[in-house]
Image 1: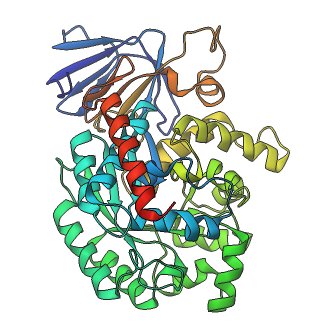
Image 2: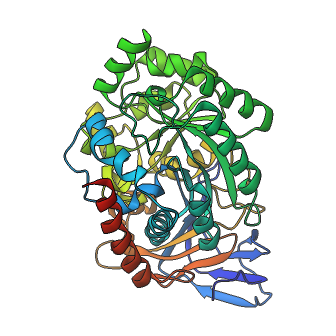
Length: 444
């Protein structure tokens, strides 16, 4: 069963509401027409009831930076630093995508995300065939904001990705008109200039103007790797975050991935402007970029989300892995066990991720009136017991295997650990076939 029932009751779970009071409740959740209608005991029978005793119910996880177009490339770009990783592997592979291979990549990534409890993503696609990726998103039931990558300059950009400024903007505008608000409002569009080295000032300024006029998000990368920063400074005479701001990419509609290399003054300015950053701990470790100072970013007033980034720079798209790493790395970086407590870390993956995407009025907490985007974790097994703080059990102990149920708009997308709308075995077979063909076309 994959359609949302008219009336659904989730019984017996411990609720981590992630609301302003950070309430932890033992309560039932009543869902009607895709929204949470009641928290607490109810004598009125529901049309459908799900027993969640022994489980923790949380807001669905929000990953604020992923690349579904790269899910096919897992294991094809390991042990390289950022710029060679892009130039030698990722860009040639992306340029070799067809609509069919991009759809296969997106479906595999979405299946992994849902099985790990992720219900909402901000995704950056590749330059071409973005419509195929949106089709996969629409079919899956996940909530997503996505946009084609925009790349109109750069000597190292392969011809299969290089586009003119006008082509990049025209294609992005058409995609926004087609997909923004589609799938009963679950899909949105974000303009995605890839990063400062692959985008002209003209393109960036037009993206900023369009965002101001339409309210669309702007999604890019910044302050990721020391070598990248040195290259930007040598070319532009200023750091990437300053250059992006000068062209209009700053403020609450601007979501920048990474922020590893940010100085304190840049953090304070981002906090004043309202620019959002996304922490991608596994990727930053694997590419040797460093460890983002999440504690200082939050202290500067920056809204910080969490994301797995892409499969070839992480090898997982697992929200719970990123959650655990975020908490542990903050402590290790500061040599302070209190640096990022469990409940604070959970905020990155729920309410703060939703706020980063401008969706906090709809998702990110378990509250009456919010959309029923929810994840249930089984924390009753030997790896979790016998007790302790429930938030700590989620952050430090939970794994993907513990994710039992996922709902988006009240529709069950994962039931008892099984996807309801997607055939995992068929997706894996299709992905293997397209991965081999794409690598051959890329000459790898």
